[in-house]
Image (cartoon, rainbow over all chains, first blue to last red; front, side, top):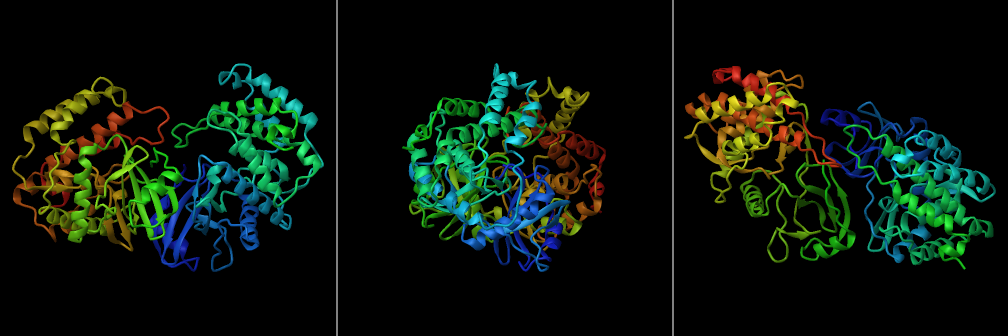
Length: 320
Length: 320
């Protein structure tokens, strides 16, 4: 949950004069997204989400994110649609932060997904990947393999305070991934953070995806591996193969995985586990005094990583 | 800001079958109120606020709060209107918590009130007091004078860790208030927490009041003293007499203060300062590990209290 920046009534009144949205009627900070400040904004024209981009989002990346949402909304992938101002710009400035207004997306996220939800997710992820192939923007994955070791270097000395021998486990895993990371899998735009809180449902059907602020160009099936990590483990960290089967089946009903993508699934899942393990570890070791964000437990991803290390083939994920 | 309890999609679906609001369309945790969990709830019928009552609100008090909001909305005091279920009840249970749905109130709170806002607040507060005279419910002020010394007892040993000699200052103030607290001023329903974040404005006019979960029966002009503390000091703790004049003038344009109420204003302001000083001190000394609430600085109220201690008459507040 996150509201880091305060927006005054006066600032909002002035800000809205750049749009065709009428005057402000209500503004409420909402508990959505941990990276930015988000508000429900009601104007004379309807309800919207106002986002102020905080320090974790690089300003130079914003045109990519906004352009991607514009492109996806035009392509029929349900997601928030950026609202453009009278001058055509969707990105502007409010309270000394970069800011954008997007359309309000109906739907509610599901925190305990059932296999049916995973099936829907798989279809939606594949549709997003297929649509994204025509998107002209490009953004490197700052949290891809090349970013993992620098992140580890900032945690290695304190990692063992979280879990004994964690530092050496991470170093060995980085070595393994350096040696085995696939380099010729189909690439495209990936969401890269498609956790259940970024997927809205209405009556068991997906109404849309949100939070594209980790989106980038990378291996498409790595995005699937992120979803396997995020959607197919129970709260006791046990792996639910039924959910994984449904997720992959849904995905393949829209976009077939190549043989190499299938055989690479275990290593992609290891990489995805490591990525979230490293960022959670970093956040845990670098908690900001007085921050109103609850850090997530990195140990959850140690458990996931151990599962993937034991998985030798895609059969471990229900693929036959 | 506060969302303490998670509500699942399934729980919400079932919960809403008790209402004539249609099916859920969206649910977003909002950063409003520090005592309870609040959500923006969109259903097929419109938008609402869903509140889950957390541990600081006594369940036995809830009928008073809900009844008061019903009464005020019927009396034309703009405030959230409780939504009653098919069985007529507005209070029920969700995710093991007491819960209620209220209407969505348009408006935006103003964090840096101008004199004009204080004038509007004064009028609105007086209208609320006058309307409340006919409300039949009764609730003692748990944070009134009788509650201050027990609260102090829980803080006295650690108070000096916050500010040197704070403990003895508090004890002397409690003695002074015990000796000088007025006992024959007009009583009625007071809001008791009418800070700027509980007052919504649309274009400089008040659209409504929210958060009645400290409301109780107490001295009416004590509520005015709370507003003087909450609205008439600048961020550097200087007292803005123009704002106080406007606040009191607005109030008296609807309800005239008696001579005794006017002469009691300094002591009422001292009591109001002490009340918020004590609860903030208690919260600061008893921070819950991992809580996502930012505690407010008790020192702000030491400064206010010192101002009121120097004020000998109501003239210090702009009354002539």
